[in-house]
Image (tube, rainbow over all chains, first blue to last red):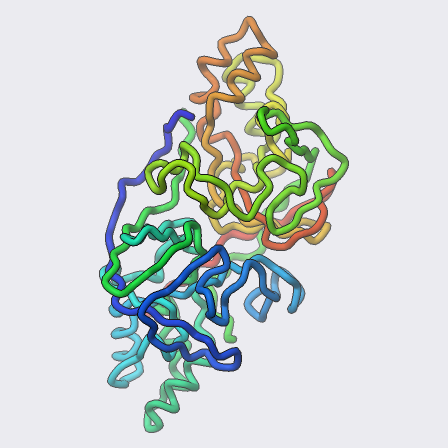
Length: 196
Length: 196
């Protein structure tokens, strides 16, 4: 193997602020846990855990609803910076990661949602995640937010306010444990350019 | 779920010319088969089949060699257009897909190797693949080529000639069968742009 990749240098770092698991099958809301234990299906015990899952409304352009597809939505990540901006736009005191069903709240990459598919996150504890793409804002967190702030217009405004700021979903490349205060290196996808 | 994705339209199409399986553990060379049978581990019977695999020399920047990681190299795809260009640059009559251990020879997307990670290939038979990135040229096909064309300088020149033209690797999103003459729609990754 000869490495001639146009390899971007190991880039930014981010910090894990808090980790969460969503264990109730009928609720999006997650709860803080001391550690995430990951295997090739994602977060063990989380409602999104699995190698495969049925296609949902996000994939109707590609697969009939209910078709068994690879689970590319094992974990979801949000950033303190983007959640603060969503809260500001909604004019509410805070938007907590657990209300959105996130597994990881991170800090240090303000535009987390721009992370491209194929980017790696290499955690200090040894875990490797691969970004599978943006997390599409849906109405479920909007309802949770509205219940938290009954006088707000969060329910009506959430999808628009969170669009492009909702974080990303990821899969496990290398299993292990993720804890608060872990750090992660961000590695952009490798791209090749043909020599002329 | 509200779909506000900045969704690129369903884009180009490509044609499956031939399909291959590499069944010998100690050889990169594949052989033509009438059909590829895919599950969530890739091509059943192929040497690259599996949900996980040991990290190799391509991942030494990220993981210790031998670490069990998710198998993102389930299938490899090459295009007739890029192989013709590699042959032209090597001044050899042809470069066959099976010599490179490819599983799919496709036609209709000349710059197949520019397909970004996260792009979907939706096949007419129902299979869905996800591009995991470029295939890094290594020295093994160079040796196969040199054996085919002893008078050439293929061994010395292959990596440079094939760089950026070596096709892509992919994983199975929706299992099923792929046959020659199937067609596939190319769907770019979804990207979101925050509203201002």
